[in-house]
Amino acid sequence: MKTSFALLVVATLAACATQSSNETDSAPAPAPSASSPSASAAPATRSGPSGSFAATSRGGNVMPQARSVYYEYDKSEIKPDSAKLVDAHAQYLRQHPEIKVKVEGNADERGSSEYNLALGQRRADAVMKRMTILGVPGDRIETVSFGKEKPKAAGHDETSWSENRRSDIVYR
Image 1 (cartoon, rainbow, N blue to C red):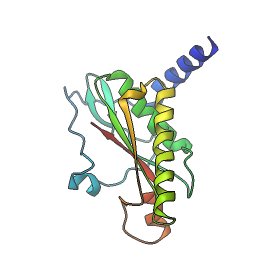
Image 2: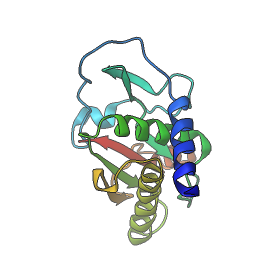
Image 3: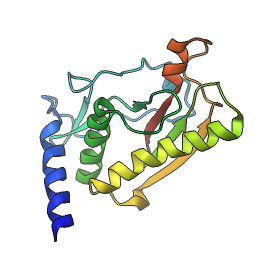
Image 4: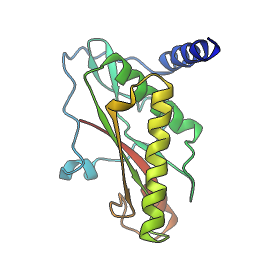
């Protein structure tokens, strides 16, 4: 009983944490697929709740625009600002039970391929775990790790590495 109450409280708080949009489109803009060139060319949105979540309205519900969750070096714990983003995606998914997502875990170039594949998987699984705790059925979330094989930034410095330590939420 306490668990059900706790989930209800978390879900209610998550619902209050997102922003609404004044748009009244009847359908969302198509989400770029992971294989499309425009998906990797899109600018990174790393800001918190200051306006980066709202993108497209669908029946009064807002699809979050930001799709990347960023991590500290060698970590898979979701940072507080990224937790708000994951919460917004979870709320959207709860409101749209027909939509599924794939969470793609990534790592920077440092470390072996095997280590980075495992780290990317832990990162993707952390996002999935948070979404399921917030009420999204696990069968609607697929996780995959690309390790260091799909960098967002090509440099060999901290700025590039911080862009590559991420999980991408891809709508299917």
